[in-house]
Length: 116
Length: 113
Image (cartoon, rainbow over all chains, first blue to last red; front, side):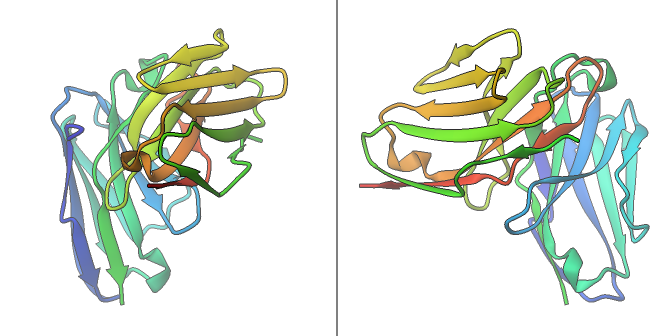
């Protein structure tokens, strides 16, 4: 266990549904991340929160909406997704965030999302 | 621009052999590098890191080598075991206040008994 949990582990949704992914870290970190992992592609950074403030929105479509209510929790709200959004969505956390000199990130197990 | 890539997408070795996984990077300003291991159904797991002021770093059964001259990073796994079968990613970071990691596509390591 890395200290980062994600729920649900699997999600199937239609294009008109609204769902949310949840991430929780138990490591006392102050930065949290959402990544998208598609087959045969590098991990794509989506969003970064440092001290609960969004510091990166990596050209992600507005149908993905992040929320960080506190330093331990991160959500990804999903609505009107497309089939090409099917992927593994990974959450990570790190110590230091923007102030960290070396940025080892701890990953959760991911949510396998399928959009029908 | 930044890019991190891998020379080989797959690597198959016999149990007990040593494995070498390679990674090329293009950003000469990158000063921190990480190797991650991702097993099927799991998120990436930290293996070892190295800072740009070092050429070599050793862990338990793993060694990372950094050649800044040719912008090359490698991960060596000694006495490879079936449990080492996974996808291995390298990632680079500019360090300092930069929180962004740039990942390579990954190499699938298969260990044959």
